[in-house]
Image (cartoon, rainbow, N blue to C red; front, side):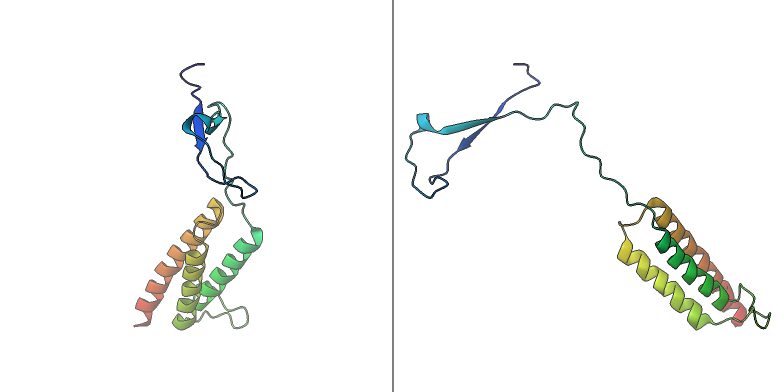
Length: 134
């Protein structure tokens, strides 16, 4: 046997069998079981990253569009004039922050990137809108 393929011996020192009867044995009679470790060339199971969910991205973009409208970045389709509603814009930014916190570690790279970039841009627009209001 090679040095690389060492055998690990496990000694079963339980005093009861599976059926509950007491086992009496001396050190020479101990049950021994050989366990061969897996070979290094065996591939470990790769943990898959979460897949991008288009519905999740649509939800994020829906909230982003409404936040943009609330921050005066989109024209009102009915009046043509954009209006700033800081309370609504701030609430939608908080919604996205909550989604980010609650889904941390469960998102695909695309979802994470979209959410982080959207939050960053909305926060900057919120600051600009708040300063313009004063």
